[in-house]
Image (cartoon, rainbow, N blue to C red; front, side, top):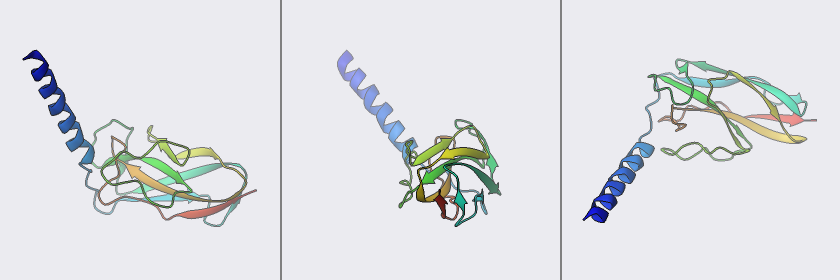
Length: 141
């Protein structure tokens, strides 16, 4: 009986986590994110400061559930946006700025790269609909 209860509790916990993970936060009306610099088509050094901006949404650290707030994720050379309802990956192509940073120093290899911002909610999940910047291209010397 004890084993059955443990399994039932675990199943309930997993179902609850599953429901929470798939529940995307609605995007605030008119919320926008953009890359202030560098500009699209710019030639930049290998280490470049990327400046972020938002409109009609507040910035808050990851884990802060303040309504109508989120934090930046910089997508580097990403062709498809992260999946809706799931946390944005954390790897070399998906950089997290969960401290509500408004800029970041990024080191890129020489060549052509694309940069795009996506705001995530307090749990790193994309908003619904996604709040993303225009994708820019930079040439790294």
